[in-house]
Image (cartoon, rainbow, N blue to C red; front, side):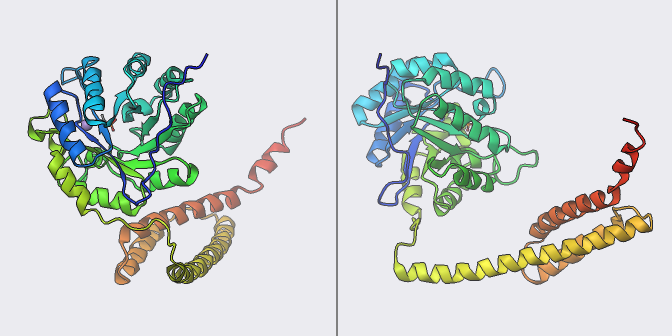
Amino acid sequence: METKTHTPVSFKRKKSGAPLVIAGPCSAESEKQMLDTARQLAKAGIDWFRAGIWKPRTRPGSFEGVGLKGLHWMNRIQQKYGLKVITEVATTAHVEACLEMKIDAVWIGARTCTNPFSVQEIASAIRGTNIPVMVKNPMNADMGLWIGALERIMAAGSNNVAAIHRGFPVANKGKYRNMPMWEIPIELKRFMPHIPVLSDPSHICGNRTWLQEVSQKAMDLNFDGLMIESHNNPTAALSDAEQQLTPKALEKLLRSLVLRQSFAGNKAVKADLNELRSHIDELDTELIYTIRQRMDLVEKIAAYKKENNIAILQEDRWAEIIEARQKSAVELGLPPELFLTIFQAVHQESIRQQTEIMNRGLYRKKSVLIPC
Ligand code: PEP
Ligand code: MN
């Protein structure tokens, strides 16, 4: 029996280079709020309308969404303004309701993505329907969980998936509500090059101040699109009031974005880039060679320490290295934190090598004492 309910849609960046934009309120609150916001967004040329119908709240008692009636409001938005609509699902019942109400796509939220049992429940519920599914990054900075969630959806037969980067909660909050950790979506793109990746600056920022900056960064990193929360009266919003934009302010933000080419099609530009890249390749090769030489010295030091019965970790020496390397970095106009990260990695490997050399033969010697 043919159960396919949805035809494929594209979540890729448009041919013009413009991002795919998904906008709408954090939560569906009333029919008036939904239709008024959608009308203004449609006028601004937005493609997709988002709204949370069931809200995963950290603590009970705050606004938990309007439930099923919100899907009827979404149907009116589809009919009246021709927008495609998307909402968050976390259970089989949510998926079934969205399928029945012909919602155009669904997304899996960050909290749900963190739990493989929940993701599998959703994957099983969408099997055979081909409803497009977007997967937000999990709450922990674990790319494996994110990839796993995408794989579960694809294994259920869906070939219409996309990822949404919404940042990661950390203990020491900086200027953002959730740390972007851009390296994680960049790695995801390397592992799954065919999956479109969108950014959600609203949940990264948690306020309106940095939305433009984060959206621009996502464009510069060649993300396919943006999911941004927009409300007809943001300050009165029942959830995430501090981070939502009016449709007008959203339009202004989108107009301010500088869109760069994702690929240097021009021959001269390509040749210039290749020239610079070949220098980088040479320097990287030298860097690897230098690290090899450094490790040769580490092996010699380990043998010497072993002979003279000296402990591997010499705290004073390690503190001195870190201080001196960071000082040199600052003198050359480089960020000291970068060198802390680099030398921590090098030092870790150095300790691993020294431990191996120190213990070489130790276990073998012991084992011969055990009669077979
Ligand atoms: C949302 O998009 O409104 C939402 C709850 O997002 P997240 O799962 O990223 O917190
Ligand atoms: Mn929200």
